[in-house]
Image (tube, rainbow, N blue to C red):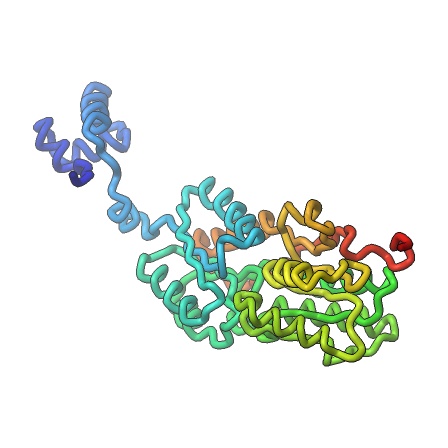
Length: 349
């Protein structure tokens, strides 16, 4: 059985009215009597009439929809961002279409093409870890599609961007480890072609240099797939633990890398933090109940989604071309827990 709804023409034929009269009645026009309005609206409600969104969008010049491109929706951070996006978009009368790249450049290109084909009014995007060429976005931007970047951004397109304070997130996490007595601090991160990895590394490096600790390249591991490949994280960790002068702490820079590193350390039966401390990026609400409880940098995902959508709607609804753009930087928050307990506070054994 196929679900179908009636059209304005069907209502007009059934009630022996003109299409114009039915259309005006449904729009509550002053030109139509209250009796006719009631007749039309009652019939429409009883027979499953729904306005045609395509026809409405043609009249308005908009589809009333926003495209969203993220790596994965099972990431707690991106789930929070999407919730923030929806809270603003729905309030403004816009629907959202969500696509996932799974950190794949080709999937990102296909997702963007799919959204453009569906005539979205604007695009919110966080780049995949594989993305280095943004020509697929430049072309749409040249054609006039409003685009706003969030989290992972590109400097090659002049538009609004909403990011977290990645530099200070990396700086504060590393400084905390240094103040807790850790000196050999390893760094497991994504590829430096993505903005967040580059900025968090710069914060890590600055904290070390300020403390007089040299940046040791052997302690830095770049994961091209940003944690999507478990073997990649496992290899990085094994290489660090095989060093003659092993790290006494690890700073990880994404939710997936952090949780995988914690899991692998447990599998290796290493005591955290006595044998190795761990601080990472994660927005999971479970960080406090993990074993041990996890020190972590969190980002304001919900707020990031809200602000990115507000900036996109400004572009969509602008009556004149926009030539001034902002990069909004939202603060991160470091919460310290047992996984980075200060060395002088370890219980005696």
